Amino acid sequence: FFFLNEKSQKMTASRKVVVALSKVDGDDPIIHTATVSAPTNIACIKYWGKANKHYNTPINSSLSLTLDQSDLRAVTTATASPSFDSDRLWLNGQEVDSACTSKRFRACVDGVVALATDKVDSSSGKILVSKDDWKKMHVHIASYNTFPTAAGLASSAAGYAALVAALVELYGAKESYPGEFTAIARQGSGSACRSLYGGFVAWRQGGEKEDWSDSIAEQVADESHWPEMRAVILVVSDAKKETSSTDGMSTSVATSEL
Image (cartoon, rainbow, N blue to C red; front, side, top):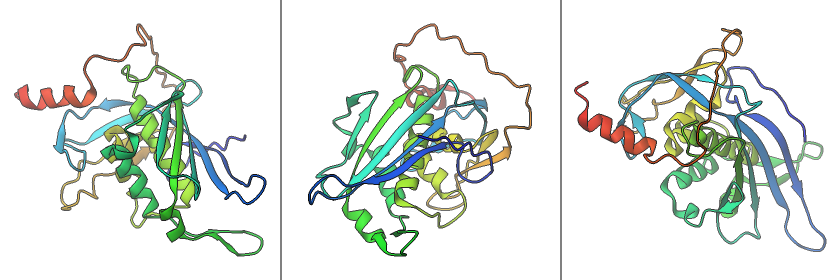
C-alpha cells in the first residue's frame, strides 16, 4: 500500500491508497479494486435542516474544517467483477443487508457509475473495461472507521466521501461539471460533500437549479491557511447516539423560530 497525500483544490482530501486488478487461476473473471481513505470534518457554521429531502440539500450554506486523517478517517475498498451477482456493503466488518436498496447508497453508486470512463491499458492502449461494461458489474464495498461510528464525530461524512472517492477511482469517473462528485456525495450524507476537500470547505446551499446540482462543496482555504489550528476531541462514549443527525435537524426546522 502507498499513501499519496493530495492537498490541492481538486477533488480529494481523501488519500488514494491503492488501485489494482487481479485475476485468479483458471478462467475466473478479473476483479477490479480501488481503496481510499477520507477524513471527517467539523462545521464552523452548521446547517440545521433539509431544504429538499429527495436531493438531500440544506436550508442554509455551511462552512467546515477538514480534520487530518492521522487519527480520524474512513477507509473504503470498492471492488467490481462480472462474477458478482449483487451489490453488497460491509461496515466495520459487518455486512449491511439492506445496502443494495438503500436510497443513499444507490445514489452514490449509481451517480458515479454513470460518469464512468473506459479503463485502458497504459502500455498497449487496449480497452480493458468499457464504460458500458462497468454498468453491468455489481460492486462490493468494504469500509471501516478508525473512530466510533454514529457517535457524533461525522463518521457518515467520512464514510460516504470515501465511498464516492473509491468509486471514482474504480470507474475512472469524470465530472460533467465542477463539483459534481460533491453533489453525489451529498446525496449519501450531506456533510460528506465537505470531506472531499482539505482545509476550510463551504457547502453552498444551491436551489437555483431545479435538480439542485448547484448544491456543491468548494474549498475556500487550503490546509496551510491556519497552521496553528488544532481540534481537541474527547470521546466520552463510543455508543451510537440516540438521535440521528437527520432527526435532530428535522426537529430544529419544525420547532426553531429562526
